[in-house]
Every structure is written in structure tokens, then in C-alpha cells.
Length: 76
Image 1: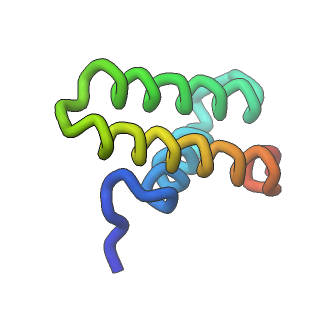
Image 2 (image 1 turned 135 degrees about the vertical axis):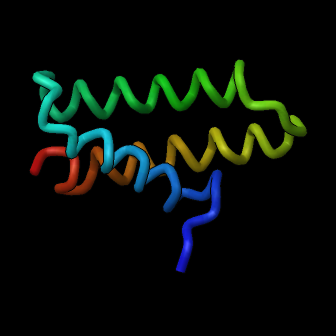
């Protein structure tokens, strides 16, 4: 099953991939904040779409961020 762009699962996958990058020397929480900020900026300034879709993607991004900070994935 493929993950659809803009869904909570999509953003969780993107965040997890970034956190798994062992070359980065930041703490996992700092990495989580960094990737979330980068994805937010891309959605706000680089992604051309209807404003309703943009808002839905941002909502899903922040939901994924919340899940990652509450879960063990961010600190494993």
C-alpha cells in the first residue's frame, strides 16, 4: 500500500526517514523540529495548490509532528 502525499502517514514517513539519518549530529528532538520546519516552509512557499489543500497538509504535518513527539519514535 502506498502512502499518499499530504496525509499524516506521509509526513510521519518523511519525518522518520530524516530522524534515521545517522550522519546528523543533532538530538532527535532537534532533528524532528528541523524537518517539521522545512516541510512547513515547503508547504507554505514552494507548493502550488489550492489553499484548502495547503491547510489540510499543514494540519496533517502538525498532527504527524505531535504523534512523533508523543511517541517513542522521536527518542528511540
